[in-house]
Length: 394
Image 1 (tube, rainbow, N blue to C red):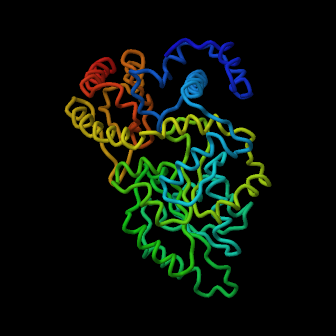
Image 2 (image 1 turned 135 degrees about the horizontal axis):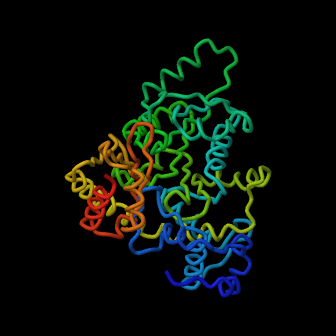
Image 3 (image 1 turned 60 degrees about the vertical axis):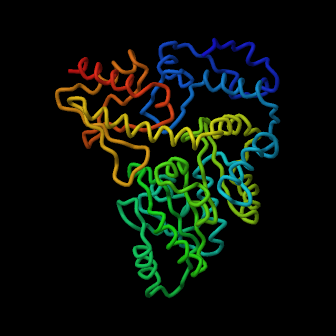
């Protein structure tokens, strides 16, 4: 990557108005080298997607501004933010989309608006909404989350019907069911899929019973590449869809929520009263839109390449890569006991521009997360690097 001139960067065009970029000074060249996501050689198995460090993000943003005529937004309105919203609305097949600062906000506001005065929301017990959002639905939005399919990614129509029947039975003061929320893929279950046939059946059931549907699709493009189901088809079964801008699209934060215009038009006021309005969201939108262009094709190519790579790696002594059943981009790397995992990780990062975790999870494996960076080296090069690393780690 070209050397970074901070003074020139701050003085260039509209970028001088970006307060969160001005203080960035990279003082650790070793750390910078190890996290260089713009490197033509880096293959990273440690994160969900492109994870730019401050210098790289600043440089990428500058490159985008210089190559494209790009207007800034004003409190989320207009400019490159609108272009991203229009693009996401088209991809999901929805009437309208809106930028939000976080996926939690997108999820929670969807539950609030879609359910109206109805109190109950049915969710997977393993879902982000149920396990990772600080009980916001109950504490802030007066919604009662009802968990289904404990410990599993899969949510079936029969399980849902049983849960609905159980909670309706004997309930004197019925509070109503507002929303069924489904996360695809499910992060807490190694990014497993939910069967599209079950989603279709649940959607039909919901419509027949006047229940709205929300899709937590933070990593929806990754699910699509493995399931063969398009983002638009997934979205068609739901009233609202959330997609993350930083999981694999390179932004430092942000989310997009898509849905009918009537629903999305209620979001700006909620964002304001809950402190979510951002004066300038364009630095997030510009980078996300940049990586979104052609992402589906690149990641589908990455998936096919990984299948061949893992087959080759499994022919090396002392190593085995296992794919998660009904999974997506997460795979498990198992090593023989005589191989030092940290030594292997250090060798790969320092000598071959390949990054893996150096410490195994409690289950004994190392998680490999497939990203488009796998395209930066040939499979022969990656296999050779692992072969040398295994010898060095004994």
